[in-house]
Image 1 (spheres, rainbow, N blue to C red):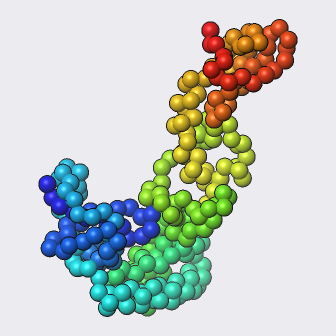
Image 2 (cartoon, helix red, strand yellow):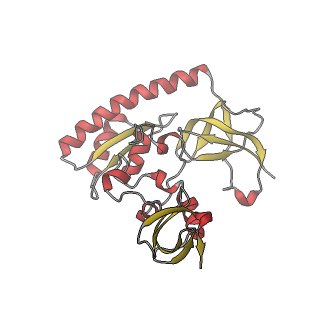
Image 3 (cartoon, rainbow, N blue to C red):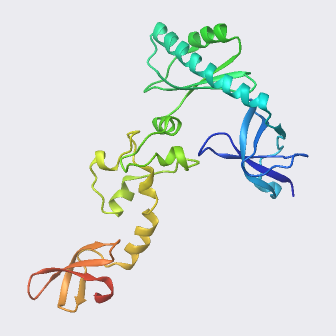
Length: 266
């Protein structure tokens, strides 16, 4: 089986496998690797291990070398150049009157390409903008349209919970989130309560969705007749997190909450 190391290029970014070659690498080491878009600096997050070929995308690219002081200086210079490129691109977007919002600029390590990430509500004809940028920076230019969730992941921030965004701290990829997940957890369906800063449904709605689905399978259905210590009644509601059942008693007409273990489903 091939020996590989797992490398990540950005915090909470996807992990890619590379062939370590003769390099002895440990988790946390910074390395220079060859990628499809040029040389990049990444961090080893999974130390050397063997993985079956069927689980890999072959052929594997190699780790070129551990980073040097010169590499670190070049990375610092790239970050400074990205700031200048951001301002210049914003200026050109305004000159061309394009309906687009520039989000981030990313130089490859070898400065062989500059990628400009932007959002827009519609398709944008940016061919003239690319020509202008190529003439200014004398290198390959790529403009990439992204969604609002990708923008939140890139920019980071504080969510409604008071913690840093999940997407920018530990979520490697976005997974589908539906309004059904909010309903299943008895959450308010007010969009301001269940939407993140990006305006989409919060990623965390998915975290406990399966637990609520499993718990609901054990619970009686609304409208079902059950037997409680106080007699028969009709289920009005259930609380999956507390594992309680709200029952309207037939004899007294009162509504009471009972622990699930005290409720006999007929």
